[in-house]
Amino acid sequence: MREIKNIAIAGAGTMGYSMAQAFAKFGYPVKLYDLFPAALEKAKHLIAINQSAEVEAGNLTAEESEALCGRITFTADLNDLADTDFLVEAILEKLDVKHSFYRQLSEVVAEDAILCSNTSGLSITKIAEAVKNPERFAGMHWMNPPHIIPLIEIIRGEKTTEETAEIVRQVALGLKKKPVVIKDAPSFVLNRLQQAILRESLHIVEQGIASPEAIDDVMKYALGFRYACFGPFETCDLGGLDIHYNISKYTWPDLCDAKAPFGLIQDCIDQGKLGVKNGAGFYDYSDGKDDAVIKHRDEMFLKLSKCLFGEE
Ligand SMILES: NC(=O)c1ccc[n+]([C@@H]2O[C@H](COP(=O)([O-])OP(=O)(O)OC[C@H]3O[C@@H](n4cnc5c(N)ncnc54)[C@H](O)[C@@H]3O)[C@@H](O)[C@H]2O)c1
Figure (cartoon, rainbow, N blue to C red):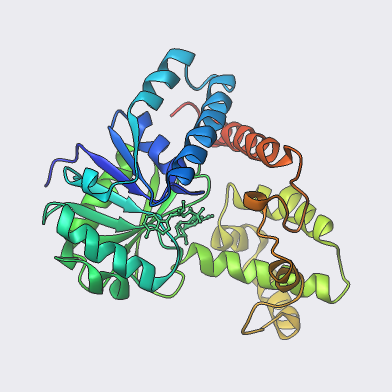
């Protein structure tokens, strides 16, 4: 198996800067690349916020945190990625943009460097059309925030070899993550489940059954609480299959089956509200509430992680 030493992350946005931290935490030198220098500056700021949450949570000393940050370098020059052994791409979620990126990247990196896309659900097989030697390419789907959430979906496209999938899995395990290897299918697994919940949540609001705040509470204080420990099949076993089967029979006919986004999310998009990243979404994040909510999220997730997995 190829020795993985030098890591590159392409795209320094919401996912990229945090993935850079996840690798740097385990001693890898990481190059964080973005087309835009302003994105790299923002990434430095957000890494500092994340790291202060880690130090406050007692996960790292201030010195360890400084050393971790020292392993991350920033570049807007694709040619700087020439010595990459393992790359995770987290750029714009558009097939043509990803294709153009992989065509250029293929000319820069070694022919056997392992290349992964963090796409949320675009076809790995289709992205691979622009990758030279597509057998060394796979999906590596991290969750937000990647330096904390344990799961990584590893997606095998039609041309991804078993060896490549295994290298990606081993790298994920080395970062103390919980990888699952799956087949290429629209939106993979996590996003299919997540989108089913989002669609039903929007439907419940639209029907006037509950407010977004109430739905968020239902998830946080019951379903999410339970799902942090037991998946849907385990939950079904615990509750009784007969009970769940009967509830399914009378509930499913009433559930949303819309084929396109609608309601509250459409209203927000039309008003240019994109969430924490631009100061407003379903809720308000102006006047520093954006940084505060990211810090709060990381503190809560770190506590949860400690609870579920101890100090590992
Ligand atoms: N945000 C999430 O919760 C999440 C979760 C899992 C996967 N993803 C996926 O990760 C990827 C990145 O998502 P994000 O939320 O970090 O996006 P983002 O918009 O926050 O960041 C994307 C970054 O990529 C840069 N970029 C765009 N085109 C580029 C190019 N051609 N070359 C280099 N840099 C380029 C942008 O400047 C930006 O900094 C997407 O494929 C997305 O679907 C996102």
